[in-house]
Image (tube, rainbow, N blue to C red; front, top):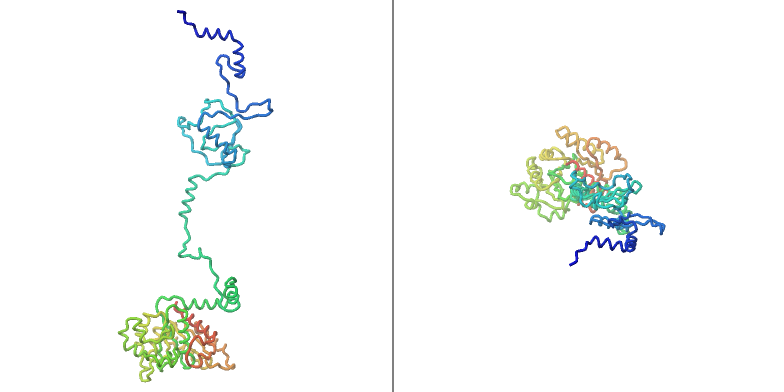
Amino acid sequence: MPDPVDNNTVNAATEAEQPELRRRRDRRRGGDSDARTGTMPITPSDVADTTAGNRTARPLRRNSWAEAAEAADERKAATGANPVIRQVPTAPHQPVSPPTVAAPAPAPSNPAQQDPEVPDEGTAAVDSSVVPTRRSAVPAVPESAPAVPALPGRAARSASRAAALTAPTPDFINSPGLFVREQKPRPVGGLRGAIYTLTGGGVNLGPSARQREEDELARRISRQLQGSYNTAVLSLKGGIGKTSTTVGVGLTLAEFRGDPPCAIDANPDSGDLVERALGEGIYQQQSPRTITDLLRNIESIDSLTALARYMHHAGRLHLIAGEQDPEVSDSLTAEEYLRIRKLISGYYSVALTDCGTGVTHNAMKGILQSADNLIIAAGYAVSGAKRARSTLHWLADHGYEELARNAIVVITDKDEVSSRVDKDAIEDHLAGICRQLIAVPHDRGVADGDLVTLDVLRPETRRAYREIAAAIVDGYV
C-alpha cells in the first residue's frame, strides 16, 4: 500500500507547475490581492471613475436592520415623500449646529446600555462622510442648510388639548347674545316702516327716534314689580280731569303690563269711575256690586275668583265701584279702606285709588297712609293751578312731605282754555314743587264726561297717559 501523500506538498507542486493560472486569478481579483491571504480590500463609497470623468457614489452594504430603515428614510426624503425630515450628511470633521427639532432622550450613562443598533467604530470600514444615526433621531443639519421647522411633540399636543378642555367656555344660557346675532328692531309706521314693508324686511332702517321713545315708555310701564303698590289720585277741585285720568292711566297700565291693575272708587260723592270706564248703559245692565257690598262680605273672600264677583272689568282693567246711595256714600272710613287695600294687595301689584274732591273726608287718612305715590290733578285755569299748589303744601304740612315731593302733577286741558291763559307760566309755577309735571292736551274723548277708551283718544293724549303710567311705576322702584 503506498504511503499517504502530503496535501501541502501536492498543492505546492501543482502551483509550481501552473504559474500562469495563478497570475490570471490575481488579475480577476483586482491585481492588488494579498498574495498570502487572498482577501479583497473594501472599496470606498466615492471613487474616481477616470473613464467616465465623474464621481459616482456606491451604496454601502448595510449590516443591520436599523441601517436598512435609515436608507429607506433617505430614499423617502429624496423622493419628497417626507419633505420635513431629511437626512443631510455632514462633511467629515465639520462642526455642526444643534438640531432644530426636539432633542432625543439622553443616552444612558452606562455604555453597555447604549442602543445596540448603532454600529461600533470598528465594526466595518464605512464612508466617513456618512454619520450612522438611530432611526428615531433626526440627523444634524449643517449651518448652511435651511432650518427645519420644529414639530410639536406628544406632550405639547396633550397639553394643548387639556388647556382647550379646561378653558372657560361662553355661557349660552345666561349670555345668549354670544351665540345669536342681535336683530335690529322692526320699524313701525312712518317712512321707515313703509320701506321695511315694501322690501319684505330686506331693508331695515331701524326704529325712528319717536318709536325708540315709545319703546322706552313701554319698557318702564311693563317693569316687573316685587310686591303690591298703590297710587292715589286726588284734587281740591272737581271737574278738572281726576276720574278721566284714573281711567286713562288704568287702561294704559292694563295694555302694557303683564298683570292686570285694579282701580278703586273711593269718592264719597257718588263717584262715577266705573261708568267712565264701561259706559253708563253697560254698567246698569251688570250687577251693581259696590264697595259697600265688598266690605259686607270681605271675611268670606279668600280667592281671586271670589273677589271677582264684586268687581267690574273694562278689558284687563279691574274696577271696584263706589257707593251710589247718597245716604251711605260718605260712610267709608280709613279702617275700612285699609281692609280693602290689604285684600287687594294679595292679588294685584298695581292699584289706583280715585279719592274724589278734598283731602279731609273720612277715608283720606287711610288712603294717604297706604299710598306709595300721588297724582295731583290740576287744570290750566288759574284757580285750578292754585288749588293744586295748595294741595301739595297741605300734604307737606301734615306729615306727608315725602308724598308731596314725589307727586306727579297732571294738568288736563279739559275746557280748551283761550289763548289768553299763559300755559307755560302755570307749568313753571307747579313744576318746581313736584317730581314731574305732565300735560294732557285737549281731547273730546276726555272732555265729554262720558266713556273713556284708548281707541278714540288722540295720539298725543295716549302718549300723555303713557308718560303718567311710566312715571307711576318709576316711583315704585
